[in-house]
Image (tube, rainbow, N blue to C red; front, side, top):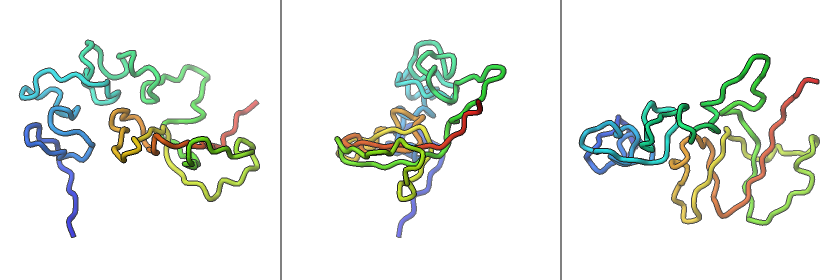
Length: 155
């Protein structure tokens, strides 16, 4: 029985050493490695690197403006649905309708639970979430996902 062991990325061995879905120079960990030269990719919003080569990194890059890691809470404001909060979800075939799932009394106890934000992977099983590294829970892109979260908003 083999066990996968993740170690820091080695930027020139053709392997995904750190098990993040990226190999060598395609791994954000190698973006500053001279062996990789300048490799531009979508911005990864919390690694301290200008991944997309526009001169801005992380939360200073407009590409990260909607990323929860870059949200700033102003005075008197509260995050009601924080990054990484758990949601109930159900993955179903495209076009599925679930009547009443938006109602507070709906029984979602048999649904899966996972942290937000959600992303998808392609129908051939290749995970696309590494291209949206903020995604914490993945589901097949050729399907529907139903999400439920209980929260209280004070009056």
